[in-house]
Image (tube, rainbow, N blue to C red; front, side, top):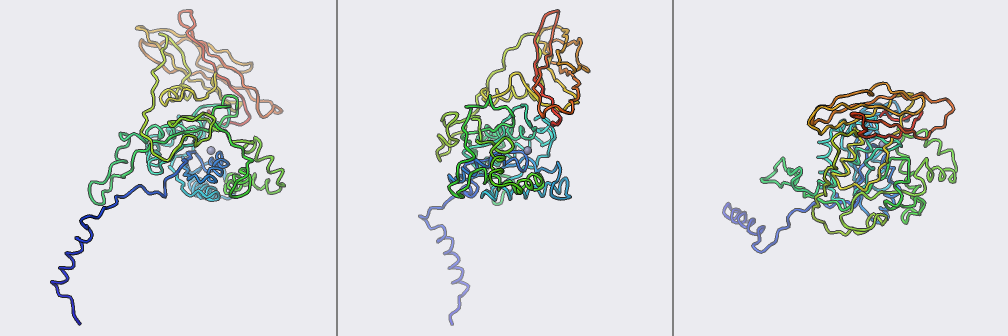
Amino acid sequence: MKRFTTQSLSALLMLVPMLASGAQQTKTLPQPDERFKVDILLVVAHPDDEGAATPYLARALDEHRRIAVAFGTRGSSGANEAGAEQAAALGDIREIEARNALATLGITNVWFLGGKDTASQNVLQSLANWGHGPWLEQLVRLVRLTRPEVILTFLPGTFIGEDHGDHQASGVLATEAFDLAGDPAVFPEQVAGPTKRLEPFFENLRPWQVKKIYYFPDAEREDIFRGKGPEYSVKDISKSSKQPYWRMALDSFRSHQTQAKSFLDTLSQMDEAQIEKIATSDGGWTDAQHFVLGKSLVGGSASGDIFEGVTPAAIPFARPEFLPEPSRPDLSVELDGPWSYYAEFRRAHGLTHLPHPEPPEIALQAPGMLVIPLWLRNRTAKTQEITLTATLPAGWTAQSGTGKFSVAAKQTAAARLEVNLPGLAENVPKKLEAQEVIVHAESNGQSIGDVKLRVELRKRALPQ
Ligand SMILES: [Zn+2]
């Protein structure tokens, strides 16, 4: 038997690289992983929040849209209706419940970004508690990885409603990611390619400009959202399952045993007509899902289909138009806190058309306390005295924050008014009409402005 000699083997080995390089052969460079390319990225706060959009997602899946979902937290706070587990262990369970809920629809591209539940209506608390910077970095990475055509998320704004600060935070961060992910100067280490083999730092992603962003409100009012975006009936029948979309959404929701076991047990005692009535009324999805168009970089009308104007080709990065600061008088008073933040947010992201309540509003638990944060601005060259007084509904009392204050020259000072809210009688309806609180600001005997806030008292509400 002829055996390879050392010389023949080395001659063969020399041939290998020659064949591999094959003088004329074209090498294919690695491309982004197509398994993670999506049409829709849904950005929400908690496991079960995806339910706010599942009837539409089921419809989009019928249209062969690819979908990814990003959750801000794992929902590790709150009660457990299905077992004894609490805190981090409950978060473990809720992550699986959310994955199962979405897998029921056929969505497996699901991400958890590691924020912490925040029981408050104040988006600024949620952003602080989640870790705004790292969370944004992760979401920008996820946009670059999944390359969505459209982002769907909660409406960033403060409203009478559940008004969960975490819901608002997901909308704020999704908007920031929409504006930043296409910018190669933002988190540039994510879009840097490896400079040597197995470079452990660079991610080799590409900047990605999302084409549209739509919001769904966490508010109870509907008037200011009407006509601001498309709506989709939840009663339409799915081509794939032959069931109405509300039914597919409900079947998906059944995974959330730790959050809704008692509700789901009640449903199991009902007939189909009763279940439909609940699912398509205010207690469920109502009869249609409403979206509010945030931004479109590809044209289309506000109430047109979510994919109107969207074509497969990538679009260039669009730097958001930034509106200049509004001019202010020399002495002024303004509502601070999330309300003033959202005015800045809308200007910074070219969203001044976004519906928001005027005057601003909030629902609070009574008895309790209303805190009205204020900015007192003095642009003059000397210290000024400003007097604050409040006009309150009957039975409400100002505990602190009224009186005379001095604001140094060229300074903006933070003030706060605290108002005691009376308890509610046993037999009041679940919701009462909102009432108006007015803070008057005067200087040298002249009005420098009023701040108004509509406040609805409830037996239960998230803390301010
Ligand atoms: Zn939620």
